Image 1 (cartoon, rainbow, N blue to C red):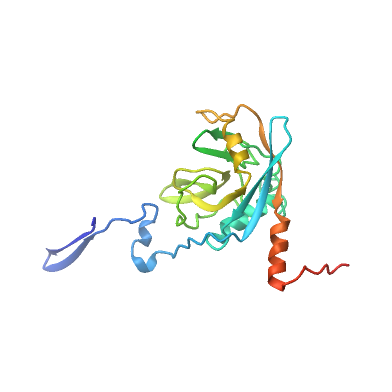
Image 2 (cartoon, rainbow, N blue to C red; image 1 turned 180 degrees about the vertical axis):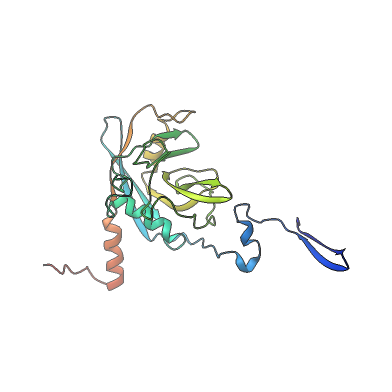
Length: 233
């Protein structure tokens, strides 16, 4: 128990002094009291599925499919899903808001794979569909295995700001918003292309990306109990 309290007297007034410790070091001090702490959701139900078709050097692309946790972090998931489809168009920097054509620029074996910087290509750029940045939604989903998809956080002046960069492995505090559903062996192959300083030995590029159509088709079938009707036919 790292919390304590005492009663002090000063100028004939009694004051209650509390010494409190954060349960989560990432929780801002302004949310110290229980009724002010936003409720965090750790629901890992897959609400969306997306894919990356990734090439290593001159080899043919291979697919990595990812499931996203839209119930836990809906804003983060919608950003990532939209950057996979490119549906939003061009961002404020004059660059398409789309992971297609971007590279995995930093690969450290047994640690992480970093990519998705479609503006600068080195991890210093990126853009989200909401503008320059948006606040991290929560840290409730633990990093207890490889294959999670998560966003990097920066701490600046006590504020946590999400970068628009993709990771596929993890060991430190980040916002987890999905997991690799298939293609993990290929993820390990990408990992083997890395180095201690993060420079990959081959060019690793997202040649194509988007939504997994079969997942949404199955959702429609389960919802209506039949094959979805093609309205245009």
